[in-house]
Image 1 (cartoon, one colour):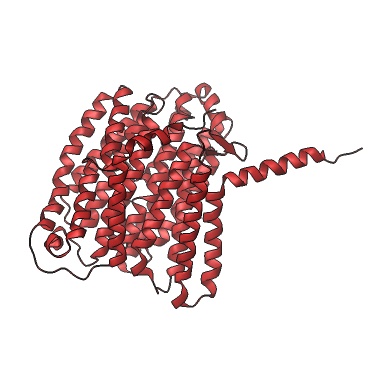
Image 2 (spheres, rainbow, N blue to C red; image 1 turned 90 degrees about the vertical axis):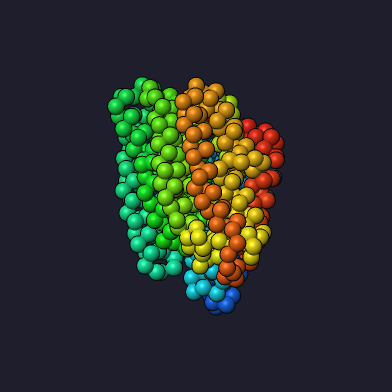
Length: 484
C-alpha cells in the first residue's frame, strides 16, 4: 500500500510555504538581522561595534522597501490564518521601522564605543519585531508570544545604563509586566477554551454562543496585558518611572514602539473576535480611553521633570488612540484615523525626546531657559513637537486627532468626543509650562548632541509633512483589516 504523499501536494505545500515567507520579508529581515548582528558583535572589537548599528540600519531600510514594494490593498493571512498581512500590519511595519531608524540616530552618540553597543541594537530590533508581530497577530497564541517578544528586550534596555534609577525602573517594569502578562495569559486560556480555538476567525464565529461571564472575564484579562503594553489605564504606572529612570533614548523607545503594536493589536481583537461577543466592549474601551486621557493630563500638570512630563503626555495620547478602537466596526474612518494618528504620534513624540537627548544635563523645565537664544533650531523643534502633541495644525497629530474625533462621533460616542476635547484644551497648560522657559532669555546651555539634534529636525519635519499629506495617508490606509 502506498502511504507516501502525492508529489503534487508536496509541491503545492512548498509553494505555499515560500509564498508565506515572501510575505513576511520585513519580519524576516529584522529577525535575521538581529541574529547576524549578535554573531557579528561577538567577534568585533569595541571600536568596531558600530558595524552592527550600520547593519541594523541596512536591515531596517530593506524591511521598509519590502513593505512598500509589496503593499497591497488585498488582505491575506499566512501560516494557517495565524498572522494577518493587511493595511494595519503594513502601516505598523512602516511606523515601527521609521521609529527604529530615528532611535538609532538619536542614541548614536551615547552608545558609540559602549561596551554593550551591540546588545542595545539587538534588543531594539527584537523589541520592534515583537511590536510588529503584535499588530499582525491573528491568533491568541501568536499574540501572547509577540507580547513577550515586545516586552523582554525592553526590560533589559531599561536597565541598560546599569545605574540605580535604571535598575529600579527595570525591576518595576518587569514585575508589573509579569503580573499583567500572566493575567493576559489567563484571558488567552479562557477565550481559547470557550471559543474552541485560538485563531480569530474561529473566535469570531464561536464567542457569540459562549458563556457571557467567561467571555467577559477573558476579554478583560486579555485587555489588561495589552493596555499595559500600550501604557493605558490600569497598567500605566510603569510609564513615568521607566521614562525617568532609563536613558532618554530608551525612554523614547518604550513610550513609542511597543505602543504602536499594542494599540493595533487591541483594535484587531476588538474588531474581529470581540465584535461577535455580547459584551458591550465599545463602552468598555470608551471608558478606558476617557480615564486614560484624563489621568494622564491631570498627572502631567504638576511635573517639573521633562521626561516625566513626556511620560504622562504619552499616557494621555493613548487615551485618544483608544477612541478609534471604541469606534471599530461602527465608523469607516476608525482604522485609517488610528493609523494616521499612530504615525504622527510616533514621529512627534520621538522628536520631543530627541530634543531632550540633545541636552542630557537639562532635567527640569527651568533648565531649558534660554533655549531660544542659544539653540534656536532646537527651540523650534521643541515648540513644533509639543504643540503637535496638543494637536495644533498643520501637524500630523492634528489631522489624526480630528479624524479620530469624527470617527468617534460617527460611532455614536459623542460624550467621549466632548471629554477628549476638554482634555485637549487642558493639555495646552502643561506643554506651555515647558515652552515658556525655552522662549525666555537665559544663561548658556551645555554643548548639544548633534546626531540627536538632526533626529529632532527630521522628526519635526515628518510631523508637519504627515499633517499636510493627511489626505493621501488616509487614502492609503483605508484598505481595512483581514476579516473572517
